[in-house]
Amino acid sequence: MTTTRTTAIAIRKHCRSLKLPGVAREYESLAREARERGWSHEDFLIEVLCAEIRSREASVVRHRLVEARFPEAKTLDTFDFHADVGIERDTMLRLARCEWVQQNGTVILAGPVGTGKTHLAIALGVEACRRRRRVLFVRAADLVRDLLEARDQRQLGRLQKRLLKQDLLLVDELGFVPFDRAGGEMLFNVLSERYERRATLVTTNLAFSEWPRVFGNDEKLAAALLDRLAHHAEVLTTKGTSYRMKKRGKTAAPPPPGSPLQGATPPSGPTPGAHTTAVE
Ligand code: ADP
Ligand code: MG
Image (cartoon, rainbow, N blue to C red; front, side, top):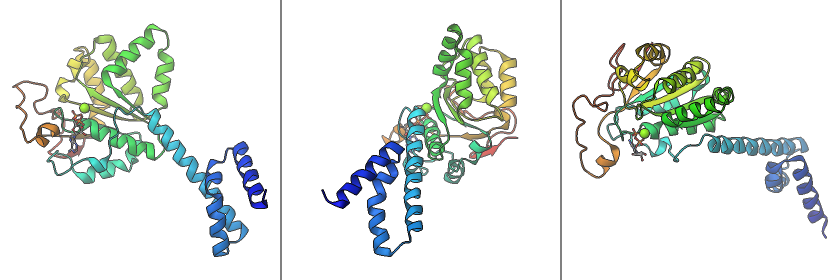
C-alpha cells in the first residue's frame, strides 16, 4: 500500500469518526490546489474548515426543506410575473430576502383560486429554508384537524409547542373548509400566539369580511384575529383567472355574484391596492 493511499484511508477514517463529511469530500482537491498555489498550512486549514462549514450548512438546508413538508417543489424562478398576477416581482424578491421572517411578520396572500398563492407561499418558504429557518407548510383544514386530534389525545400542548418552534408557519387555503367553533378557536389561538413572536404566512381565497364564516361564524373571534393579524400584515392580492386556464388559452368562467372567489380583496381597513399594501 502506498503512503498516499494509507494517508487517504486514515483521513477518511478520522473524518468519519469526527463526522466531517465536508472535509472527507474536499480535502484531496484542496490539497492539490494548496500544492499548486503554494498555500501556507494555515491557509489550507482555513479552506478545509470552510469546506466543512459549507457542507454542514447545505445539510441543514436539506433538512429544513424536508421538515417543511412542502406539497410540491415551487420556486420564485418558475413563477411567471408577466402573467398579470397582481403581484410585483420586486415585492416577492424583497419578501424572499426573509427580513419579515426575522422580524416575526405576517404576510397574507389573498386571491381567487389558481392565481399562484400556494406557489408563492411555497417559494417564500423555500427561501426561508435556504436561510436555515425552520418552516412548516400546512393546509388550514389539516392544521385544524391535527389540533382537534391533539386535543382529544391530550397532546395539544406538545403540538402547540412544535408549531411555535417554527420560524415560519405557512397556512394554506384558509377559507376552503369552514371550521366549527372549536376548530376556529384553536386556529385562532395558534395564529394569535404567533403574532409578533413568529412569522406566519396565510393564503386565502376569502375577503377579510368573510373570515367570520371560517371561524365558526364567531364575529368576535374573527374581529380579534383580523385586528391582531390581518391589519398588521403585509397583504398581497393575486388577481385574474386561473393560471392553468390561462395557459390553456381559455378563460375561466367569472365567479358567480357573491361568491367567495369574487374579488378576494380585504374590504375593511386600508384596502390593498392592485399590488401590495403594508396595512398598519
Ligand atoms: P392558488 O393557490 O392561488 O389556487 P396555485 O399556486 O396552486 O394557485 O397555482 C395553480 C398552478 O398554477 C400551480 O401549479 C402553480 O405553480 C401554477 N401557477 C399559478 N400562477 C402561476 C404563475 N404566475 N407562474 C407560474 N405558475 C403559476
Ligand atoms: Mg392554493
